[in-house]
Length: 150
Image (cartoon, rainbow, N blue to C red; front, top):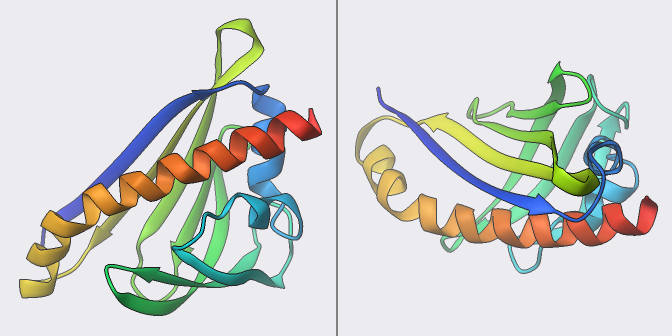
């Protein structure tokens, strides 16, 4: 079963510590970076709230399909990499924050998932451009929120 991978990166005008703090703050700032029209309603925290161990739930509408996603947050590299693993599908969305020149941040949002059969092939062709648009919009919001908090 092939693994699908989609990523987008940008240099943000905000310090890495502020960017990572926004990403890890699921009870507050993280909800403010989720872009319309793909995210419906408010991100809900079921457990925890900051970084690893947090369990979140949110609704999305992508490619005409609406679904509720429950995910568990981990920090494979605390302070640098945050990951959300979808309980249902195993898909992993990761946020990587690296220092860039001038006190800025280089951020990469990526998703990896596997899906068998025809559905997997359809997603392989249709999902990447849509997910990249979502990630770019999310990074624009992330830059705004992190710069305001810095």
